[in-house]
Image (cartoon, rainbow, N blue to C red):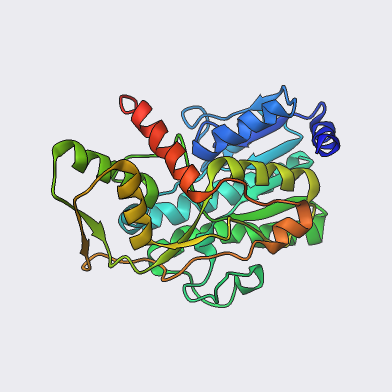
Length: 322
């Protein structure tokens, strides 16, 4: 283990790294892990300074950062509600941000570009577990297709720029992430922080029930954010191809079981009512994670219940800032 750690530290030696989205949920853990690996020059572009949807802002960022390596995590993201309310924004902003950054990075001579895609790129009815080969065999689930397809174009860009220009970029497909520092805003959050907040607030008010979207039957796979950050850095260090690679935990759970687990861990004892007028989203999600393990030795380390406990504890400790 010590020698592999040493090798990974050698990879980053004297390299300047730009992390788009570095101030965000996943990005903050990536930045911490870069620091642990001895990286001293980490550039984190703030949205207020660089609107990466605009080409001039991308060029200015590259000029200011002078990066050897870029890890592109910035995205406009949200749960089903946010995707349904802003499909055009989710498509345009994510597409323009990614393709522009990609093209300008190649022009600038960046050594390597790591792209975080999304599990939303998979077809709605892809066979379980999702294998990377299935990515193009159908249309994504409708509620998040605009976002998923915008990110998927970066895979096409990775493959074509490698083929024509020899540009080194990699495309990773993280499954749904969760953990401390997540977004707990009920309008824009994903399912785990939304349910944690819902249970804790209902408990504080003394409510006898909570209402959840759909019927509870869909399944999801979740990856602890710190594990995801490690996977992204391992891939950046060791992987140099444009085949897409899943990052996941291989643990599948139904939304019903998820909510019952969160209710138990938050000590909410009321009834759970399902609002079946609301959409379920994709029926099942579970990734085949064998490619990541084979190509760069990534395997998630955090058990789901332990990850949930850490997430709940963080939220309770930061109620005043969430």
